[in-house]
Image (cartoon, rainbow, N blue to C red; front, side, top):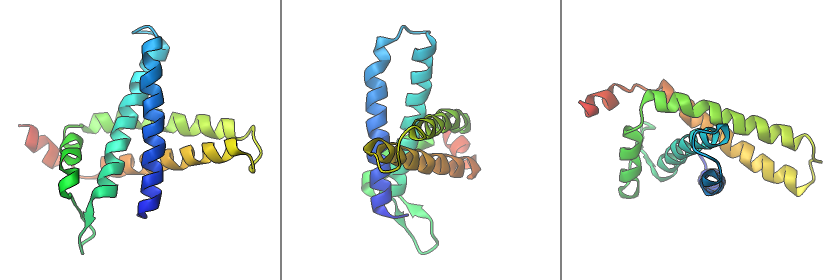
Length: 147
């Protein structure tokens, strides 16, 4: 995957994550808005980790990603996530995509807002793909590590 695409997606997801974390305290704990943001933040954190692994990983001749020294901590944090964590991450990511597409339909393709929303859609679509790829992967190594 192209580094520029990954960098753009990482920047978009980091930006959305910061905004969600900043606004969450404004909602009462247990409220629908607070729960929505809590789930969205968890999903964005998982997506951020997967994007970082993809960006910082080194590809071998067999196409497998070998973690570099910079990504060891990221790889360890991903190992701590369960299959269920990734399953729960899909809905908030898909919700963001849907909301951005709905908002985008209200703007001309040449507008700055349309282009900004397209960057978010592209980042979330990539994140969704990486989450689905992670779900499809064999997680037997993850369960063995936790024993």
